[in-house]
Image (cartoon, rainbow, N blue to C red; front, side):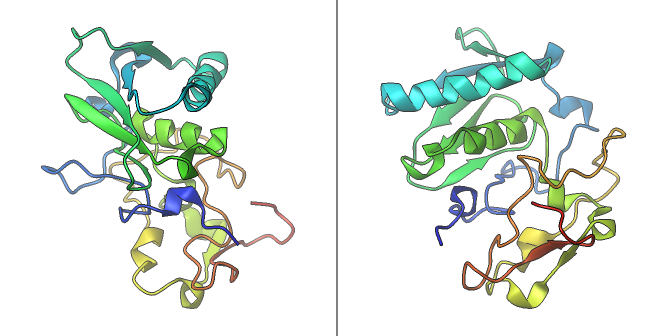
Length: 202
């Protein structure tokens, strides 16, 4: 079984890059982490080929169709913006606006095999943590700690309620921000996350 590309990076929860000056989690409850008026300036690395760039633009188009978030090309005048890079370090992003230039990395080709991976990393930049990291997640899923690969248990830490908020949205097993049932499995097959209610797909 192939490893989820979002698990390729050696970052918090696989793909979250914390700002060097702030090891704490930032979520949408922090006004400073929000993008003014929901507009996110961006620049895309020239190392992506035309097909890969198209996939990135298609992911952004999903935000334009279904949300109030708007991605717009960086003009050089904005103080805060995202740069989408193609480094050989997995798929990762900071959470929310951190100030200045912030990178989203999409390793080629692994992070660009499906649009959902791009949507996922962009959503971190918007300000969302993983669904399975919600502080009340134990009401909905069980974490099978013995099945988690050695050294990766921290990827299942819960967010603290003081800095995160669900804004009235229920737990979403099918969210693009929810990792698979075998995320960080010690053999890529054993389940690490299972719904408390059977037969709910993840």
